[in-house]
Image 1: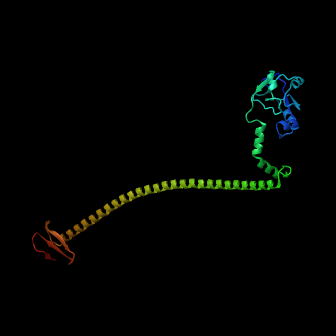
Image 2 (image 1 turned 135 degrees about the vertical axis):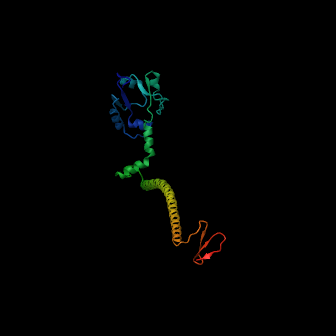
Length: 263
């Protein structure tokens, strides 16, 4: 080990008979446990069939200098004492280690038990029979129904998520269209106001020009009539007023208080 470069690490492992009797049923067999320990790069040697409680005889046989384990007392279910490592601690051969959080056989078994139904269904789908898995006929049918309902719920949930995504996208597009529409309408109204102002200016300009032309034409006609009277020899003073009788289609001239003379 990197902290003890001159250390030769031996790992003792109990067999199935002792472990099942004093701790409980295991997931792996004793041979599988031995083999998995041999493949650990920190392990130099595996001692099969190790005793549940270490004795002086076992320590002397394997020339063990120290026994390493975490500091928490490990209950001795064999009845020999309160702690499996009580004897080793008493003779000063115990070295305390730190337990790695989340790494324990109990946690692994708990995860398997928690998702037991899923593991059973997965193995049934892979071709294992209910007898291989120790599952009754009723249990198998109930698991299949439950898994079918679960898949249906997942499918419905996915469809709901798709609908929500589409609705959200549509809402975003709607808001974008509304914002653009507001800008377009505002731009149109602005252009319309500018155009309206221009049209008013044009109308005023055109109205002024037309009025000016009418006045010029009236003045021209008046001048033409004055010239016509001059040619006929009928002079009249500047103080004379000119009248036109729309009812009789006759023209009248008056001078001061004189009576009207019909022509």
